[in-house]
Amino acid sequence: MTCFLCTETQVDFCRHCGQEFCASHQSKLNNKLCCNCVSDANLETQSEPLIDSDGVTHQGRHIRLIGEGWPNDIVTIASLNDNELEEQIRGLQALLKIAIQTSDYARISIAARQFEKGEREHSKRRKLMQRREELAKGVVRLASQKPATAKPKDDTAKLAEQLGITREQATALMKLASQIGGPQ
Image (cartoon, rainbow, N blue to C red):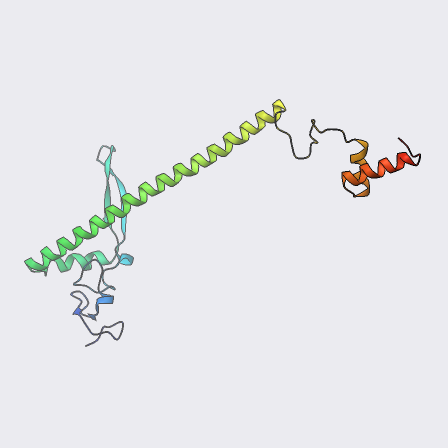
């Protein structure tokens, strides 16, 4: 016999629909049912706050089972023997433990990342405010401003820059010009 969804060898038959299924198509939540009868997709819930008859809201929540998989799962409970019932209780407790650990990890990780994001935004804001204060005081020089402490260039440096030669060559050129009667 083969699985009703693939060509794998059958492992068991579904206690609800009677289809034969393999390990790949077994429900992850109830090993006595196939994945079509009980899965994440058909085990939906609806959560509401706890409100008493006086209209007072209490801590906790009211969970309603609205997916079509719930009746399928609950019907199989009565058909289980004591050993199967114990096995499923242990399996569901293990699933719950993993879900709680995953939930705790996700909550802590989200909080740590949100804190880091807030710190970065605060740090950027603090740096911008500091920069604004320094600009207002005139401590910081903008890239477009010329430095106020720039030394005036002497005649040799100006000549070297204009002709594209070294300072030593410009000095030699000026010395030669003064010897032949050029400007001093």
